[in-house]
Image 1 (cartoon, rainbow, N blue to C red):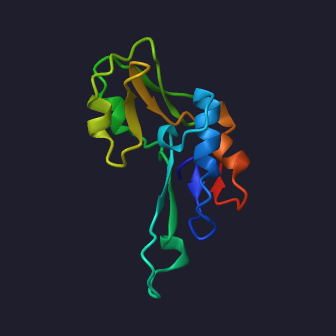
Image 2 (cartoon, rainbow, N blue to C red):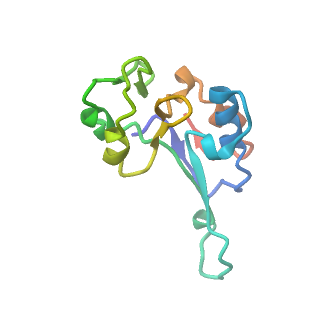
Length: 138
């Protein structure tokens, strides 16, 4: 089981989780730079289930982790929280980890010069703490 679980039936699409994530990690409110995302299906149709309208997509903290296996520098290591964390000093921003992640949950930050992914906020995920509908559970 992934350390961070999603109940998409409860997600209302507010994107507060993305805002909290970007604030904690970057000091600014910018959902595009969050380490998770809410995919929103706004096509109105009566056959679409509530769980398919707003869907939080989070890092599954795979084990084994393809992103970590692809890193030639060994810059991605698993911590006690269950999160695979990027060592910014070792990361060369080669992008092999990005290519290896089937879920698109790791990206090279061109401004910072290293890969970024969910680190579970050191064991206290801000997205979970700020989700008003408890759609995210740690």
